[in-house]
Length: 413
Image 1 (cartoon, rainbow, N blue to C red):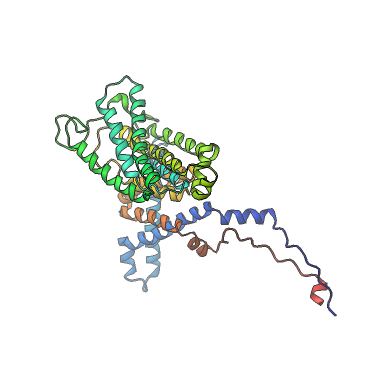
Image 2 (cartoon, helix red, strand yellow):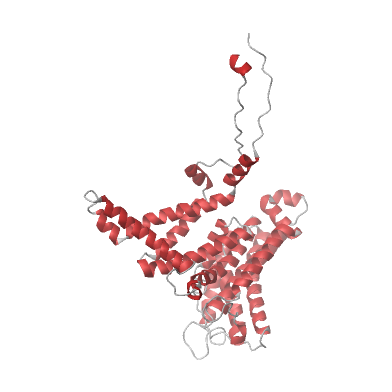
């Protein structure tokens, strides 16, 4: 005769077990593992393209150790060169020289951070801001005109140039937001078309005397920026890092406050989660679309300002955005549209950009390998189930409780 089984409540997981579950199901670990997988894939590409590995592979079965040694030399040499060019130069004679690569990474990261904030903010409101290129170009045109052709007192000149660039980027993105709010047109199409308009509009301004083209020149380029309009150097003339990085940190703090501490940010997030429910709750969805695009465009415009007034103060041409309008989408995706995540992702991609030149110069690794690694990061970020399957991580929302031990009474039954 079997004993009567009394129902038992499922065991409560321990704090350690619950903490590990949250870590392994969170977005942060997916981003870290996506970067790790991309670096592994980059190692394979480095090995394939290395001449020494190819030569040793031709007699692999005779002496396999040579091939393995060549693989190690190629991959380790490339990533050591990446570190030397992005973080700290181990071959430098002094700390002052060794820290220069880090300052270069932060310089490259500056426009990526602020542009990524603009893209990420729109993402949080349910909008896809693909118009970073156009917003950067218009901001660069406005800041460049003020910086090169307006004569203002020191201090005021820089402030007016920065504000002009932010306003220009905000207006350009606000056009897309207004059209979407009034007509329902998709913002992806609108922002892409505005990119083309901005590109050709800037080309016309650079080719026209009296607008942006340098006086007395036939080249499609502006005059150098005035000394009073330049972003000051942070660490002296030995380094290229300028105050634009401080502006990026301020932008990160501002975006975090807007999203996490302001009522406006709450409405942005509500519209992004469910615009129909937000409308029922009394939120003007169309107004939120316009406002979020204006703020996002201003943040992206700050990237154009930092390029014009800090990175290329000798004058710029139509390639001032350098593809960063689209790189910002990658940064926002890797940062999960979180201001702090975007800050970390921007620094990472700035390090890739700075270290890529070092890899190419020191080890002969094609710079395209770095671009492939960045693209793979986007691929893995866009496919979290794939990353979880590779590393056998639990799916989010699924609690794996430990099985309770069976009592002697249950076993005998």
